[in-house]
Length: 304
Ligand code: PEP
Ligand code: MG
Image 1 (cartoon, rainbow, N blue to C red):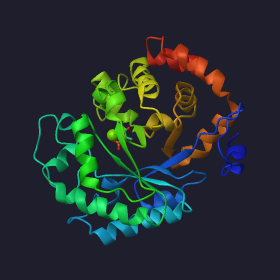
Image 2 (spheres, protein in one colour):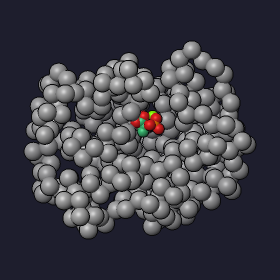
Image 3 (spheres, helix red, strand yellow):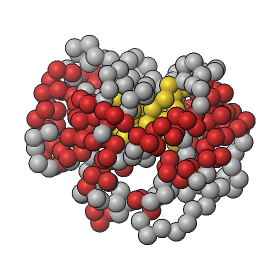
Image 4 (tube, protein in one colour):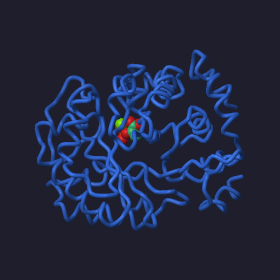
């Protein structure tokens, strides 16, 4: 099965009943993009990983060069550049942060740049530059309120033609008001890693509570279902959290109506192979059942 998956690697992932799901790759380095096989682009460029060990902030030119290299390594397919997602478990050495009692509930993602807008400004400049040359999407992490979306769009300024703009949905509040939060955006991308940790109140880095932090928890699935159903018309819904890297979970996400997935490199061909075997109609019925179950274990059992 693995051999067949690898042979068909560059074919689109189309279900037996004809639904094509772009399967993208998550990257944190240019090498990740070079290593990717069969990806339809990148659904998540983790820029805080790409530049995480820099002692000083990278210039606009350095950033643009890295984004260009990633796009080129993916054959000019679309790339989704996430703005600095600093904080929580992800330090940026050129942006030291205060020690906090609860870093995951603190100064993270877009929140940090309200006080440091100049660091976001250079990044947005680099993104705008590259967007004139190759298909680019920009996405803002850890968004909670509509006011933050408005602020982010204001920082971005006039959108160059072809630059698509979106937010990550990884805070439960964002999922619960997606109908207003996502107005005017091109896409949203659900970050199931953080969405799971915040929904279940289980630190994603703490192994003692790992069984609670399971993205197949129906409580998390209900939030994903809500996003798909309530998002404003025409706003594309993707998932770039780790749930999309698990072929069985990926079928569930497609059943919930998610339109695009982004997985870790080695899983991309396997997720695509799985999607080619299923029917989207059957997946929708399985997803509807999953929403009624009461544990991640029960969902996993059903999927098998
Ligand atoms: C997520 O939270 O699911 C996500 C994709 O972002 P990160 O893992 O980088 O926090
Ligand atoms: Mg996240």
